[in-house]
Image (cartoon, rainbow, N blue to C red; front, top):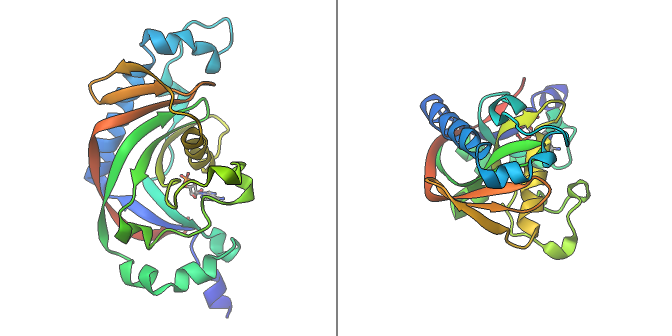
Length: 218
Ligand code: 2AM
């Protein structure tokens, strides 16, 4: 029916509770503030700024957008493949409105996006669509065959003109690369460089983030 067609959201996902948004946002800002002062980062500054520039303010470089969330299924109001099936899934219906505890295990930065990697539990993986890591648009070699849920992340910011969908693609790309060189032990964990402006900080202590499974209509 028309009602059914129009009642599908832009996306389903876990939305961080407001106090947790502040905590995660602050941690991300602290990380960016420290990262752009590191000699190791300055050495590769050309990845972010023009050749002539010696500095970049990462806090200014990235724009933050909507409420912090981890998208499970992008439905595009029903136009995306599998959107209707996802919305009808009994697990999705049963979980709608419930609060989950997400484990944020890494922060990553590229010239396009900054995000947090989310490591999903078996229970949370039941809400994760099976084809998310396989899409042709992802541009990842099929041979890489990353485990289901590898793409799970929270977009923390995007460079000017970059759409948030890029964050998950950047994460998948980092995960297919050989482990980067360890460049620095930071208070939060160890920082690795993956080339072409790609950085990942594995958190010593994962951040536990309470988040409500719900949807966004826009
Ligand atoms: P994100 O999950 O990386 O943040 C609205 O645009 C939300 O849907 C954003 O959170 C965005 O990215 C996500 N999104 C947009 N297009 C998408 C796509 N094609 N596949 C998966 N997620 C998408």
